[in-house]
Length: 418
Image (cartoon, rainbow, N blue to C red):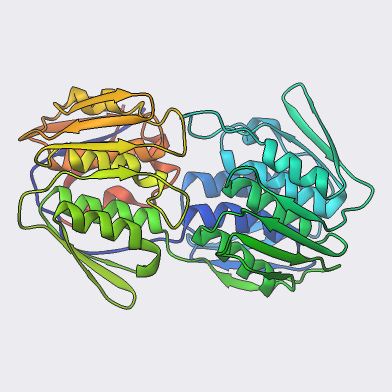
């Protein structure tokens, strides 16, 4: 069992380079299976979810080559199966994107219900609603989703709730449907735009990505391409919070500052200094942190994937802050772990009240999910004494070389095996 051990109290200083966006990569890699040629994808984060997605594609007949840690070549021309491997599917949420891909490629898909972080119900009803509107029938059988159609035909689809997963899956299916598909109330996250750009490079006809109305005119074939994935806004935001929590001074390179606007605005409200440049941000903190209220929202609102991290920061802010989790119904499981370190947090449903304390103290804690693990690292970096974080497999699902990157910034951190 691997653990991360942190001796807190050191101010982070220096530069850190952000990896490719996890949430874009886990959609773009399966999308490459729609091509009639080889796709070379660059700036791919070398994390567990990516390795797992590559194994899934290989099991289905694709030839996957790691050119280096961050460049992957995918040749899907030998893929024959419309069924995804059960044991691998259960380990990541984004594996459900294979539903849209396989439906477009083979007119049928047999995919086990996916796993991933457990912080609330993640229904796929909006995904299935979209497939059904495009002309597919579906059924759930022994934990497997089976979707099949004679032909996919473009249509008008209104999503009852803003859903990144449903938006992605409908885009993937509609890209080869006959005619025009219109998705209303679509998600607007940067990785939705990145997926649309990737598909358009392959020859798709998608416009409106980044707005709440996406239009997709189906095409018959898609070609292999070279493509580079956008930087990861959540990884960037996490290092921004780390710099603030330790009273440090960190320049975060390889970012798109516009993608960070909601995070930047909230940090500035808390009293953190953020300077923006063309492809980097500098974050430094030289004064006490102030309380604030945070409500998570779909993009361009404050991202739910930054909620645990900002909560960890606010444990040391003066006064009482309120965190309203408006996206997921059970994303405060990590609070108990922060309480072990001396945090004063109370949770009532989807709202957490955070009373700032003078200091946190190191403790033995466990990561309950990916972003919760990041929050515990933030707390450990700013705490007195030693913090040991268990179940770090969650953290490694989404952060590339996080221990080495923090060592380069001056943190006292190490990964140990027992």
